[in-house]
Image (spheres, rainbow, N blue to C red):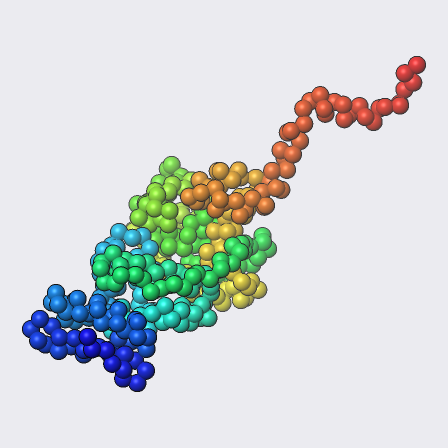
Length: 341
């Protein structure tokens, strides 16, 4: 066994079965980590794997094996961002400290919640590498950042009116349609005419295109039908277009400028879905019905709007009073009005 230091980093020298000498950096200044790397590489070289496996090899295999994963696009985006840190790096030399540094950078750039997505991807990739036999145990010990309280932002009637006045036509109809149906941005931008049944007044989203992984049918109200009628002749394939082409993204400069002109802050496109659910709750839609309309998987995900449903449920406030109790209550005011004698 040959392990030696160059500066603060341990290197190894291993000979293969054919006598070929392999010198490699372990990427670590820890002697125990370096020895583990040495033993692993010796086993790999002995069985003919001369080239050390890299971060790029790991992500390539991950994507090859996860083609059915619904959130694969997000995984691709995460991996591409992490490439700037580890592309070309021997996979087994990436340490928990390296992961912490990268994830913390993402947390500073964005949010704790978003950084957690990056950490979860890295953890899953290292756990999978253990299954592949690339290493004995994952080095990633970092825990996710504490989850913040669920964000619930929706537009007041006045804010909604102001925003609609400021948006250009293609974004205005998409935003209003989102509030009317509760569809997520990707489902609105990707909505095709072959998923709309104007006669039955409904549309559907297939499981492969919906976050829950289930087919989702949505009934359409009068205003939603009006919007679709207005867009009918713009494209033979896609419902919402701009200059004849399907809209790919709504989070554009035009969207942000319209928010600014309308005097609306702390608002994202996804909050239109919160606006949809909030008004349903306030107008008395039962939470189980709202769950079905919005395509949520569990009632727990809808309960965030429960506090808003009190006003809409006010009409039912007296339903728990038996008739006899109600009659007694009415007679209270008459006590003493006449002499029982």
